[in-house]
Amino acid sequence: MWQLAPDDARPDAARLATAWRDLHAQAGRRLLLAVAGDTFVGTLDTLVAPNLTHGARPYMVVENVVVAPGWRRRGVARALMLAALDEATAAGCYKVQLVSNAARTDAHRFYASIGFAQSALGYRRYLTTAT
Image (cartoon, rainbow, N blue to C red; front, side):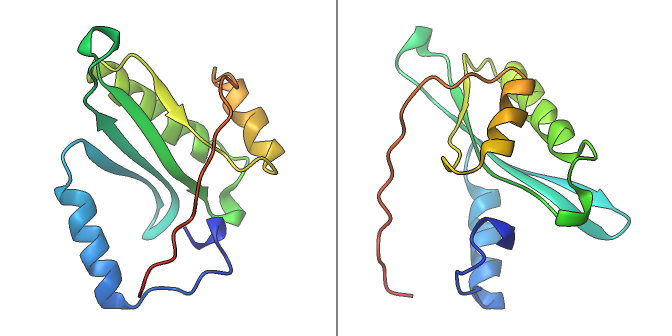
């Protein structure tokens, strides 16, 4: 997953273990993994969120779609995204949404190829916190 933010400092093992535990404990949260042998080659993080609109149907947020460089353009991201879409359908979600860095035009073409449409202008604000 380091490819998404290669300049970020890597967390120590204890912090990673805490994040892993918290991720798995969060209701509606799933981390999908693509594995080749004993190596993780892709990840996709999902959250099914309850909702008060659209007939109170939930929606899914997709984050951290990452494929190892040697495994790109081999169907890994497609398989992960299709699995996430299946899970969203099974959960009764009315939509699946994601954001992608504006500079990642290859990723944008990929998302369009599996049925996603650019439909919103997104904003984010990074927060500085103590480590």
